[in-house]
Amino acid sequence: MKANTIKPQISRNGNGKTLIVTVDVGKVTNMGYYRYPDGEDTKPFEFFNDGRGFDRFWDRICRELEAAGDKIEEVVVGIESTGPYAEPLVHYLRKRKVRLVQVNPMHTKRLKELQGNSPNKTDRKDPKVIADIIELGHALSLVIPEGCAAELRRLTQARERAMGRLTALFNQLYHLIFIIFPEFLQIFKNIKIKSAQHLLKYLTTPQSIVEYGLEALAATLKKISRGKLGQGQAQALYEGAEKSVGVQEGQESIVEEIRHILSLIEESEQFIAEIEEKMSAYLKQIPYSGVILSIKGIGEITVAGLIGEVGDFRQFKTIGEMLKLAGLDLYEISSGKQKGNRHISKRGRPLIRKLLFFAAINVVRKGGILHQTYQDYLSRGMVKMKALIAIARKLLGIIFALVRDQKEYIEGYKEIKTVVEEAA
Image: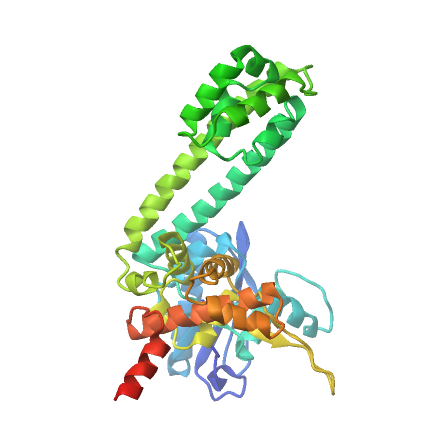
């Protein structure tokens, strides 16, 4: 989606020629509504959220257009951003001669009290509120990813879900290990490393460590860690196993669950690796991906995720639209002589903010392209979190400019330009 103001041709003054159609999307049924430029409207009507329902909805709109004749020149269809249940309808309508827009649920929530001066929420009330928001000019146009960008969006979302499941599995694993072998967690503070997982798979309990023996344990650790771990870690682990206070009652069942979780972790990691490989392949087919990758500190997964979430950077005309899409646009609450602090709105796509935030962490490291800028922010008294958000905003501006101009990033460009100008 991108910020888009619906101009006064959709006002109720009777001079416009735009039919506003709105839909309150539900899991099973949707509530439709339309309003003519002169303010005349219809009662909200229900239709199923499936193919036949969509056809009936569209046939009804077509009949209205036919009856209106040349009084209507454009149809704007507005939908509240409510998640996956709207996607089939959006893809259905994109093939029709309509302009698709969406409204922020926060706007709907705040404006609906004006309908009858009541906070009452009903399916028949919501589509009217959506139409009001569109008339006020607060709609956001939909940028629907196509081709490789659509694949990247799905892959990015799949990767996020897989990473969430993986984190949950590691948390479960940590809790179970603490019950039967808490000393293990003192030696291996990071159970995500392969050496720790190998030991947990084959030498799960303190008793199995002791039975295995110190020498064999040291040799195994050295082998599976490729020399990074050895006698010291083996000695500490062996002594911890000998004096372990881990629970032995029901231990066998816990061991079985630990090994099951380890197999799920391995499966999830393999799935994520396959997703990332596909993301890399699709990214190579995006014409402008190379200019974004030219920024030192931004990797393929980040770029693939950004393109998937944005849809197409080239469809945005200003950086302001991009910032609003990401929810990185600024606002402040001031009154009279009191001036409030500025904050980001967080009303855009959260995954874009997440990707940019972690990219910001990379580019502010020593030697990073925005390290000095970050240090300047800190020297001005800006707290680290706000400084990183400022860097994320700046980074999005750089990406937008590179795609717009189709230029690769040149590190130290300002300094080089100054030297060239002085030499001339």
